[in-house]
Amino acid sequence: MSAYRDKDPRIHGIQSKIRVVPNFPKPAGIMFQDITTLLLDPKAFKDTVDLFVERYKGKNISVVAGIEARGFIFGPPIALEIGAKFVPLRKPKKLPGRVISEEYELEYGRDCLEMHLGAVEPGEQALVVDDLIATGGTLCAAMKLLERVGADVVECACVIELPDLKGRERLNGKPLYVLLESH
Amino acid sequence: MFAGDQNGLQGDPRLKAISEAIRVVPHFPKPGIMFQDITTLLLDHKAFKDTVDIFVDRYRDMGISVVAGVEARGFMFGPSIALAIGAKFVPLRKPRKLPGEVISEAYVLEYGTDCLEMHVGAVQPGERALVIDDLVATGGTLSAAIRLLERAGAQVVECACVVGLREVKGQHGLNGKPLYILVEPRQQINCSAPPVNGVETCRHDDLILGGNFGSPVNTTSKSD
Image (cartoon, rainbow over all chains, first blue to last red; front, side):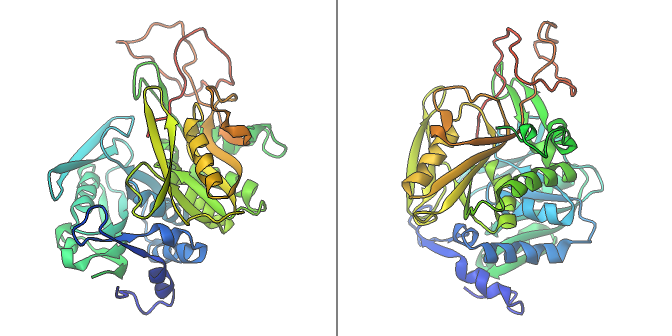
């Protein structure tokens, strides 16, 4: 795994805490990037959140949208530190109120992401957070949800990028900020 | 125990604001359930921050090294608490989500069973742990969470929830572990009023502490 932000001394510590699990969720040579081991190291987890907070504090971001479920781990601490609201983007039928839905493609079939109506107002500046970007399909759906209610997505933020899957190109020109790359 | 019963937090205006920031959604996920929706609390930065701060103030000096959060709404509160008290965060997940070797604990639902999993090696014997979720209903999920941590040799100090009833109903009783709750679930205030188009209405001033209005309506349901 190569470091992307190798100028910051905290990156190496974060990188070393991420566990690679082969053949998950299915045997096919997939190397799953497991961030749960990062969460077991309080300093490395704090450094991860701090790197995002340092980038986004004072930038007038009022919404942090996190993608179910690992986006729920990183998004709220960032939102709380930068003074933004946290908006969970969820799989279908989890959110109890009225929602808007955005479909996206999986390797086989389709899935759907939902957001509560009224959670985000037109003109709000939003950040989308997830643990990892692979093909970019989920992040793209997340951005569309926010844009449909009139928010401006400032950036997508992930701990890890898999650049070989070219997810960055699916973000319709929106910037992507990651701490680490994995090839 | 309830946060508002304790010295220092009695009449704390933060608790009232937290309660009022939680939206009640009738008949979700099924008729008769008054769902306590914490997503509106997350939209209120001050109330969300106050929620985390109240938990942090309680747990920071208890020697807790593990905060275990129940998927998925426990993930929204647990990590911030863990970061503030210098503890690790351990996600407790539905089956087949965690990629490494896991231990599993089954628990009973109204119809059927479900299962909670934790990574082997996440928790060491002797560690002091906190379990966090948004809401406690019957206590089935929290009981499974406690069992997972104890099987790994940890000591569960307390379970913490934003919303819960004064008495945890149902058979589970949390294995004798203490439960700390910030606010009670809100119910509709006037059960004798006829429903509108079959839907009960909820008002924001209806914070009721316990009481039975003679209605078969269940006040809480643990889904997800």
